Picture 1 (cartoon, rainbow, N blue to C red):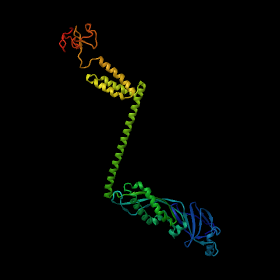
Picture 2 (picture 1 turned 180 degrees about the horizontal axis):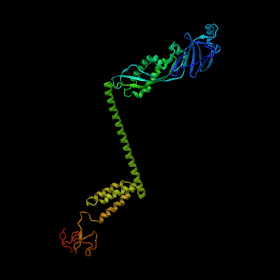
Picture 3 (picture 1 turned 135 degrees about the horizontal axis):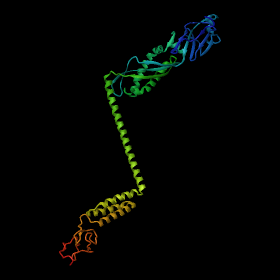
Picture 4 (picture 1 turned 45 degrees about the horizontal axis):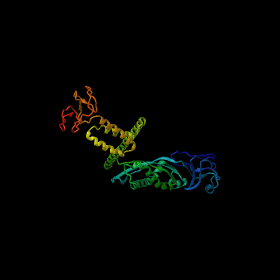
Length: 390
């Protein structure tokens, strides 16, 4: 090997550790270490020197840990024998994992036995390159993502199954709600497995459970799935009806407010108050009562109205007075009418002349004996028999 030899990494980005294919090196050779890499010289499993990113000339001055070794191993000559490893320090992401067998447990919500699977992704990075080489790689030439997961498969399977089943039971997570708890389950597994990776010089930066494989061919699972779906649908319908009812009540409430505002605006424009409006209504009902026998009720109504506010009292008083006056001016429905002595036509209440023949009506047409008021052209008093006009 010439002194001007260049030593550099020749692996890919998915490789954690790549061993340089040759073991004989010359002092003065050029070592190139890329960004996010480390280069380690080993001899018989013992670390000689470590180099970070950059260009390095292999000289004893640049290899302080190896000075004694070079003098001993080479006898002071330039060539030396060692193993060179390039370590990829970048985070290796999207490494797939999956359970190799089913996770068996008793569903804590529906109380029936289940078997599920799980899979997802993880990402790791090198924390201690020397520990990784010594404890895991050994004499291997390459440590790829696939080989790394194969090394940790047994640890993952044991921890993942145990943690998932215990977390489901502890937190009472039903099979039909398990997908909404994937984040919590992932965090629990990550916490449990991180130390196992760290013992081998690796950081478990991320652990995700992305899919839980459900027993879609299990009859019990399908039966409870149908029951859950129907219950969920019923709950959604009940919630929807409740929301619609609240919307309807709110709409009615707004309509009442709008109507009240409109009525209040109308009173404002027509210049009357709510009390006056109620007084008008009471007085109108009283005025419409034309029966003679109901006059006592009118009086009773007036008595009841004494307890109403002064403004209403005034209004009702005035309206009632007008109504009673109109009742007095017109004959009651059961009262007999008077007739003209000359033509026999009916006379209006309080008329002094006949509207049909012009005959003057006597101011008082009473019986001279008993005072009965004649209402027709009778000759004798129907009450005492006295001849009319005597």
